[in-house]
Image (cartoon, rainbow, N blue to C red; front, top):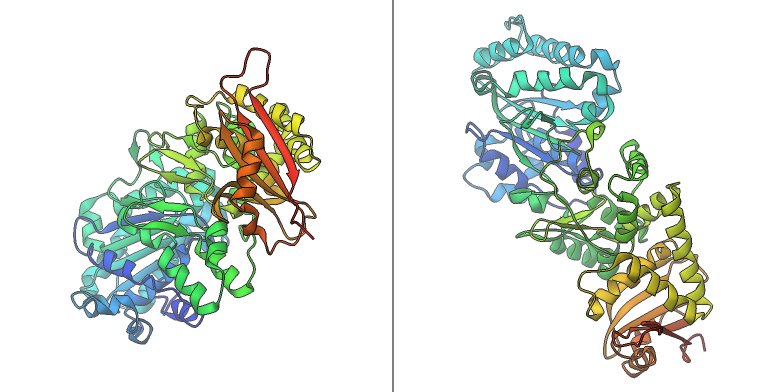
Length: 527
């Protein structure tokens, strides 16, 4: 076993020794591409979404230097009678973890380091092998000598693109040498699998490595169920470990793909299972920290849009022109598309709209927005904070005035129902995610509460039950909350509960405020 040639199965063995959700069906998809024109696959997904787990699984399955049948015989891949045994431990595997490699050598030496390291391991494994004048020639000689083509697995393939700007062109040329010329590629590789955060970098109007089939957070296609955990997988984890499924859904769900449905952040779900604690496990990274810079640049009003998103809104995004080059961002669509690839936004390819997927990411957005120093953004945060203060202190007139102000600024195209009113209210309360967890249409009593804000553990604040009315009175909204017993959903809360009725009267005469608010303390709270 080597570091880069045939690394063995110890990585996947360690994964199997812990709580494991079976994702071996991904192997079937790669097996289908072996020795076909579709042999090159690139799957991009965010950090902490199991990219390295998948890469280690593939290494263990294909690597001919070990026997991995004990690791796979009880997994779903073993049920594939056509391909399971045919490809199990049958190939020389070249495994490159680009993040690891970058940490081992200087930026200028990365490509030479890769070629020299792999060549030396090949010469050690096959003494009769003669190195070629170029790296691809050496690989061709090795494949001809052994009679076996390689499986190549590149983890964090885009790390040099994201972190080493000075070698981007040389790195892309290196990949193009291996994977662009069909004559070379077909002679060397039975299949190749690359995974990273970002899709393949565009070179002009074309992909720099155009022969790869790409699957991303925009269009995961058949890999959708392998991006993260599915609803069924999370339900089983919750059942096996006695965890609250609804809590998992609120905190870590929100990514939705065709034919798959809900997809959850796998790293966060596993940490919540182990810790028995729902929290934001979305740790800061250099890539994530750079988002603050993108938002601060405010392409076409990005900071305003992020505040809207933090309040639970959706925005239209044109993802088609994204070139995967932060140095040449042209507009807010490029910034928002990057956020989709990074997992900060969920994207619906049918509606072409993006939104913040869950509570965990909403907390991160709140942190980022508060660090933006643009005057407009600072003002929005202050106004939202003031709105929450006025709500808690029963200043209904001020609440109505601020909702009215947000409505006038945003001017929704179809502001003619309670759903549109809800959108404005959520935007107005966007900074609440610092102290509250927001629930929409929460099952409660004899119906569904429009909006419920429940304080987080360390926040000594009242819960807010908000009911919205269109062309009716705010007092009528309060009466509906009481009649349908919406506060029943908070019977275990133990603190104060405020009932907030917000209405919009389209027929209000000139000079009269169209929005109205009534705030009352729930009489059964904390008694």
